[in-house]
Image 1: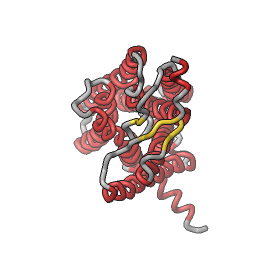
Image 2: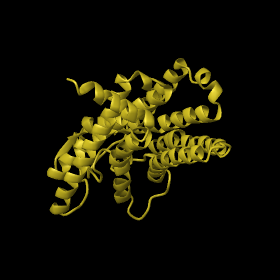
Image 3: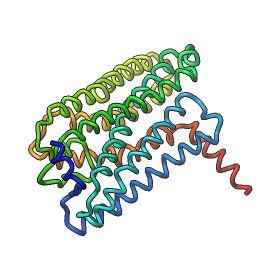
Length: 310
């Protein structure tokens, strides 16, 4: 097994099988979405840092979400854009596993951050008088950094298990980045340990948090129904529905990828679903969680107002 492992020095990422004109179009589209992701999340981070009125638990968690979105988009999108220009360019074995580790870390961190943010909204809406006591800064710091630590640990375990797998023969990864299951498909040995670890990770970071998020929002919706003001109910429902759309897209695509049996074309399906992680969610999150928020709009106006005299 060790001898077989040492011959693996690089992988080839196949990306999407498309006509050159379509690849050129997608290169432009993906470049635009990536730029919007960086711009939107950077604006949110800048506003939260500059405006003291946004130094609240909710925006503290949103700042972590923005960092995650920038990070894992930057971990996969440049590779995709490069492959569109040169689809046969190889990636080293070490570089591939590094990309896998960071993708898993950022993706799993976002799963738990979405859960933390739903809990924060639950406390704010269902227990408003106790909010400042429950969500004190010590608790918020623990809730923000626990996802990073636990996600990095599980990602490292999965990568270490890949190092124990022998590869031989075809080393073409049928994906646009080094996705975990696509790499394991190239193994020439039994990978049941890896599959069990993937299942454990999926239950702990996908299915479990998704169910808890749904419970939180159900409690929130029941609380909203008790609001006397019709305008207040409408605004709260609008916010919750947009949040649930993001959560549904993110967790839904992850559950389909890692917990539902393969379809007739699993690799193509995974590549399409991975676009949600790389583009759509990182682009949508600033719009859904922040830029529609009156406090963020006010902070943006204040920052721009300070800059005009210069």
